Amino acid sequence: MAKAFSVASWNVEHLRSQGVTSRITDVVGFLADQNPDVFALYELEGKQAFDALTSLMPNYTFHITEGQQVQQILLGVRTNITAFFTQKTEFRSGVSLLRPGALLTLRISEENYPLLFLHTKSGTDPRGLGLRDDMLERAIDFAKILDRQATDGKPSNYIFLGDFNIMGMQYRYVRDRDIVATQELQKLEHGAKRRKMKVLDKDEAHTWWGGGSLAPSNLDFVVARNHLQFKKFDGVEVSVRGWPKIADPAKRLEWVRKLSDHGLLFFQVERPS
Image (tube, rainbow, N blue to C red; front, side, top):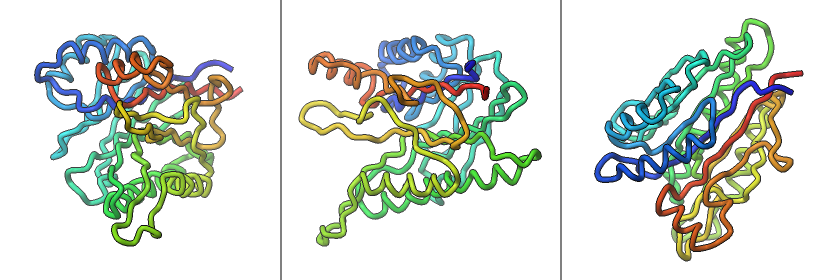
């Protein structure tokens, strides 16, 4: 099968301009090494960081979310790809300081591919879980809206992805009501199945690690329509790159401190045979 397009999705952990020019260069250098056709960076802060990206990656066009939130989502698209960007404020779930969804619709070989990039609410308290759950339910049900807009009667080539912050819930004083992260993920999987979608498999079990004695977590995901086809990396659809691929503990921690506590997700959509 031939490639349709490739995507990189990466939370770059408060990437801002103040005194971190070298970090911006390191982050963009690692991203450029992956050579994606499309990419999303989450937690971008500061106009100067955006300027650095545009100068260091000249073969891409860029789009960035706007609003009261400090952390933005920046998208890059290779210049030879036709794409339409829309900021989707409904994915704030009524909270103005949450990140909106970033919808990018690609036009590849007469096919539309809607990609929705999300950075959902973090937190293990009931409010955090509730907002996160609402954002993800909206993302799942967006498939139905896209299908209604299709003129050929076929299901849309819909993919939603990003830092979902799936971390469960701790219910203070009533701990037997706690929800573990795997249960929250199961709910996402069941909801996706309802819309003929699936959570893509990754080649690493964890995508976030804060260093030291902190346990790594599984926070970043890709959800796609069942009919879409993907290149396989060691038998799975998503390659997690960065610190999860580093075996040496000291070098792994160095990478986290230098670049980000999140690994980068990379996948490639194939053209239908």
